[in-house]
Length: 148
Image (cartoon, rainbow, N blue to C red):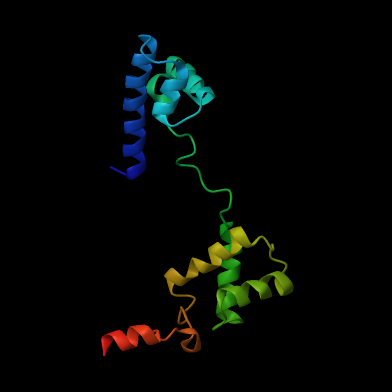
């Protein structure tokens, strides 16, 4: 079972318990919403959806949909082809700059660079050393004196 499915199941169970207490006049809407960690307005929406659709109305509707930031497959294929043919050895950032400037790719960094950076896992792009040697901090003098 995935973590999202588990959390949705727990939310439905917790909501059913809190809703029962609210129906029995043990809790106000505000108290019930606080227990669930949502606003009073969200609690009322959940109640309406629960009455109309049952427990299926409480499921997260965002799950299972593709991300709006996802790079279209034809762009990713074209970028991979360009990288292999012309830009082999470039970093993701430098490669993206050339794609935007020379090949009219969109400049939306959020969506496209994440797709290009996803090429690291496929082995297309090579990872470089994370911190340059000149930037690495030496142990402090106090630490060195303590260790001696």
